[in-house]
Length: 341
Ligand SMILES: [Zn+2]
Image (cartoon, rainbow, N blue to C red; front, side, top):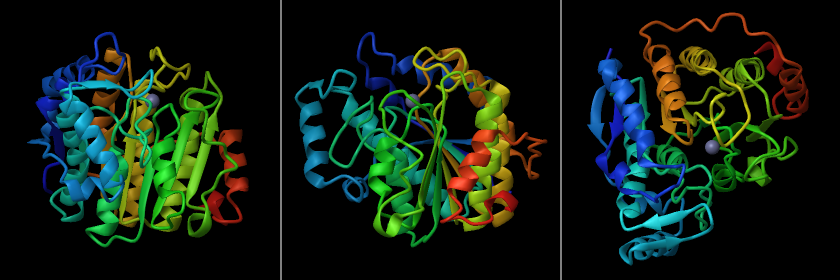
């Protein structure tokens, strides 16, 4: 079997806003931990800069040019949370480029799994609006590349970052070739992601929001992934599964109040790998948030053997949580029979 891939780049360290929680040490801590495990056998690759045309499949060219000009000018605040510096441009185009290159490799069959672990994160970036620490929608750029460049007709994105992926949702709300599934704490920033929004127009049914209350832990998160997200994979048979992998649902994270453990992240990975294996889809993880350095590093290290496992990993018995039962009932008009999938 070809080795799994790990995309990175030193440019991730160049986007540095003093005192900001979304900081270069996130990557340093992650790479120290994964590197100490010899990268779990991954081929470690330098993330290329995303081509202008790859970015503009998601973000209008004028928006891309405005971010470039702001950074060339030394940077500045876009909102209170989202601040560009001179180094942000290179970091952001590599973060999008790593995700796109991961998709290229997965679709080409060069690897069955892989990780794009760069920053800044991306899932809050809307087509024409940087927000929530995000400038370009990395996972969205990657998913759009799979459909537009490689001709895939079914790409599923699971976003398990603790915050709702409003940017990814906005980009694909009307699309039926990208199924977006988001588990997120609610209420919490950015305040979007109600269960009632299922997409619009041709995309109706292809946006699945799974909000959970603060304090939710492995029981809630694992159940929603095992009993809602994984059945959606088996029912829809995507050709590619991407995970917006934030680690801020971890119990140690300072920006949210969920209580997921390292074992919980490994378990969610097992559920998705099993479902993806059943339909023959490769799996790519794209780093999003996570603001406790130890939690990011340990959680990612815990899921890597599961993600990379040669054989289909075991998910174990995951209890059906009432939140999952409610979601399956709610989705019945668009996804009948999910409970049995
Ligand atoms: Zn987050």
